[in-house]
Length: 99
Image (cartoon, rainbow, N blue to C red):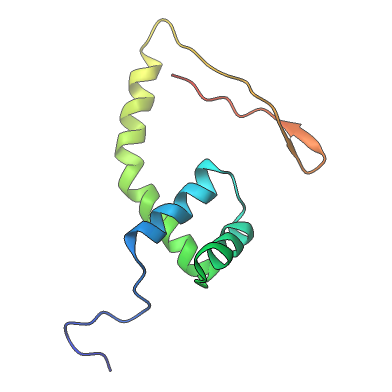
């Protein structure tokens, strides 16, 4: 049983969580590669479940802002975009960021 002032689980630094989110979302690493990168770079073993919780928590936090941006972009008469291709599983994908 944990003391009342100590939460159960493994305490991870907020900076490590933000690095994990960057590796997964911005650098487009898979869950497995993100976990491997954290292990190699910081000698920290993060479980897939922990990483999934971090991703879900971040999604919950940014969700309202993302919806607000989506609504603003949808009402604009002129919009810019980029269709830079990338290789994925022996094929190509074109993520299309817009702004």
